[in-house]
Image (cartoon, rainbow over all chains, first blue to last red; front, side):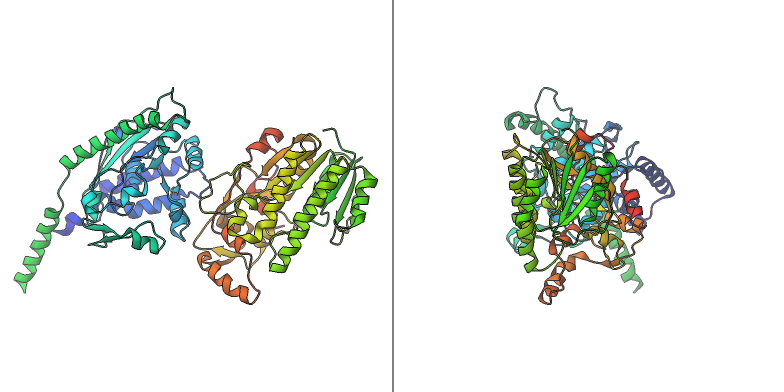
Length: 292
Length: 316
């Protein structure tokens, strides 16, 4: 009965994972970056998280065919109270596309300077969100993952779930400077990992944290997650990187609109998860009582 | 500029200054080099190099300028900021800041054609929000967090201000090298990498740039003829994580969480056994510099040793 929720991968899934990992090893065998990227650390992380990705969150990816083997800026909505959405998008782009890659997520200096975690995130490809850093990576043919909503995107209380915050313009200026297409990504389902949340921002600040999410559950619930990969948005050739905000805004709004459209579709098509959990748990509970 | 005939090297007791004088004399044996230092002069016999023990604050320092009509002055005599103690800071401020001011003043008065100053990449500071490959235009933030580094930043700023102010009279070059390593120089980084008691951080693994002492000396020598007035970061294209660097050198080190080093250091300070706190930051955060300005003038392959080669040479 619990096989449905087992984290054990099928033979086919294991084979697929190994094939994708060997492609990644080949791609990154000579790659070296100034943050200490280590493909073996990435492989270790994928080996650990892929079963969770596949079996716990049962992630479905739509639109993987939109991705070619070239650098992109992936711009996603931010969902969930922990940056698990970034981790899942990274695995999706490594495991579900023909030419896998390790996405470089942008992290805050708070995380980058954190003992152990800062070093681990750097070794697995995450870097401090900084224009110079993004430019360097794109010049090397790497792709980056940005959350244009910023920290505000993951500091939503229950009543604000799935509301997208105003997108910043910075990522679009980077794309303009590097002439890199932007891929709109939408993650649906991650908000329900922590269904009841209150953000104690003032309390968080007392501890030097950007916020302090108070949740009913400490461990993320197995909410089924869907990732929608939109068609790449080509940046205009005739717009300068130093263009006025209003000119940039027009394009950022189009990307924001695309992400929201994907979000609406995703919410209509999303899978329920409470029933799936309650039925087998109830069966087991009833059976045990019967035996007693 | 044309090949110089007479050169003054300040700080000749240092290993880098001696290698530089060898490189200059190797390129042109006819040049005359005067090396001065307030420390004991080196016991080396290099044809063309005359070493004198002298303090910059004394009158005979000015006499030296007056008597010798130097073409080029190398200021490699900045007092190391890696030592400890608050008394030491006042000495460093006197030597690095006041001494440098005197060198600049004398160079201007005695019509020196070129003044080459060795600063350090430490002026940028090792901060968690550092962008990679800092340019010469990036702000010097070292002393914001660590006031004990104000002599280093102050000296650099005095030199750069001077450089632009008198650019029509004298060509001034400020070099900001990354970590210089080699068997002939005894700086903090070379000692750290080769020490059996080096702290090996377990909670951080910053990325470093290293340049071999010979390559640095070559850059200094070429600065005389190939570099125009300006500030230049000096680093190779390579970079390496600290743990990898320690592995190459063969240093096992002592695994230690750097995140507890700062509070521990506060306790050690009470018994005068502390280490410079800014060094702890360099074991936590990367501070990488861009060499693009230097490459424009010295070409793509201005260095001979890659990082792994330079680290391997430390074992000798």
